[in-house]
Length: 273
Ligand SMILES: [Zn+2]
Image 1 (tube, helix red, strand yellow):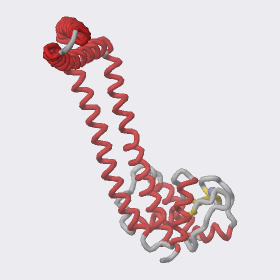
Image 2 (cartoon, protein in one colour):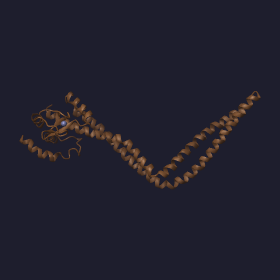
Image 3 (tube, protein in one colour):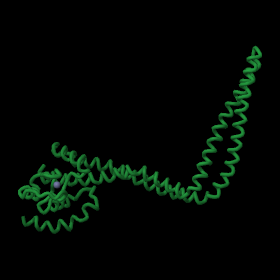
Image 4 (cartoon, helix red, strand yellow):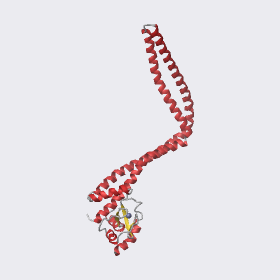
């Protein structure tokens, strides 16, 4: 593979990598976004939420106590049976004490359940007054949440597709070059490539030796910036070659938006060299 072909691949890999990072951030941000939607709902409907939370709390208490009550009733029956089996006065007194204790627990539960039910009835009425409004609010939350989930699902699909695409683009590139790319990605926030222009690295603006700059312009070698260590390419030549090749399917709209204008002007210079 020629240096120019390698550089074309690297430019395409950088684009794919940028899109991958973008897609990964969409997936990563989704849970917090959904929490935020839910949080805003709770904020907007604080009064309703307070009533609903209390309602849920009471419902839970009522259900828990009801099932506990069943166990207590069973215990009471068992103790009463046991009472028939006692052998002396001391055992009899002890058993009566158990029965009294369980009876007290039963009545405590029964009273609490009754209180729960009274309050539940009152809150049911209050919730009903909010119902129509909350229905609309819930629908809005669902629409928003679904949009976030859908974006996340699409981003996941993009990640799969882009990962495969990157694998294909890396295929055939020298292992040392790829290792360098990965190292740079880790230390340079994913940006391993830099444009060269006006005799400088266009990322850190360090001046390049004229000889090196010429080679970069002609795509005769893959050079690294002596300062930021990024791999350097001369955009007009590579962009033209990419356009001839039909471009990459993962071509992003934004980063390349200014390229045609730049490329047009600089191509004149490039041709004169
Ligand atoms: Zn640099």
